[in-house]
Length: 278
Image (tube, rainbow, N blue to C red; front, side, top):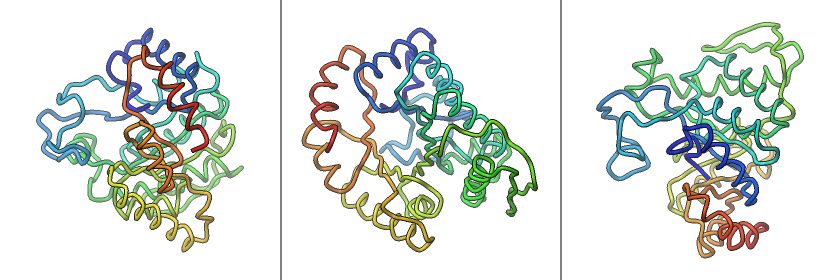
């Protein structure tokens, strides 16, 4: 489920009950969202709604830091994976983020799914002092820096926006943290193919998603990577009809919109169990 760190789950008791119930029902993962700040009256159109506004239709909606929220519920669960959908990479210091994500993965026993994106709200970038126009290039370099800090013993990286030489960043993660690239553009698909372990478009158009999946695979091949190792995630209607449609085009993880805990048992029986191998 997406939007796990919003609504009633900004409160600790509700977050714990929600995460534990989702784990018991067999959900694979919970996905958080992120905005550090939301400028009042922002004008940049939100790309995933017709009216250009984020879910909730308010500028002052509560959005806890996703990594903090994930750490909180990781401590009261044992199996359910915890994803960022998405973490806005260029707004964050690369090393602080890499260390926080690795620490959470280590403490949770390897349950982190790092969904990432370059961001869309120019006003937020302006408020944080990050050049909106450079966000794509910064994102690519940060992903390379994450890998170096997570995988190298003595870590080095040389880029235009990020550069460091022979440092230690400990603890390293439990294993390989999957980087799942969000976005509905060919550039995002390219980033997934070149740097990611998965791709996460949310356009809802099956033909468009199939085209982007194919582009991500071709970009992976061009980069000398195995295209068959990419997984494909999307948000959509979790009904038998749509689960089968998504599986047909290659979707390997379907994220649902939030639902009340009272619906978990029925959903577990009708969808999770019935389509676990779809």
